[in-house]
Length: 125
Picture: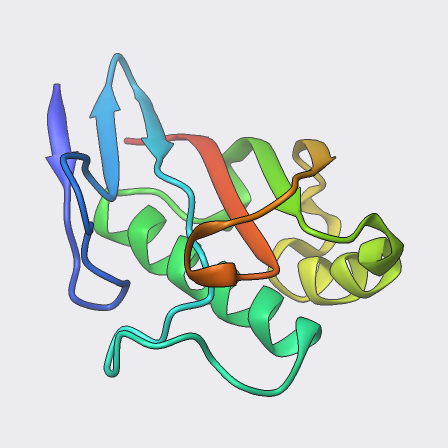
């Protein structure tokens, strides 16, 4: 097992890793829309938050030897399921036609009152 860490995504704020690789798979921790440079939530509404969470996810995937085309499963946590259409618009920008399996779940609250958190399982080389 190997842990993954990159400065291109927010640092872990507790006893966990940004990602872990083992047995040919990578498991990422949930990525919220923190700007890695400032450590603060991005401004600009829900779409901006989704795009930043996906950018953070992309950075962790690449640091672990994977990329969005190799993602097998994504789990999305939303604080408002009514934003599902907006989620899909931003999501498609990163994943395009790759279409990994996905679950989306509405939750009561996310860290730092983020509106979205995204985690993934991907293949690695």
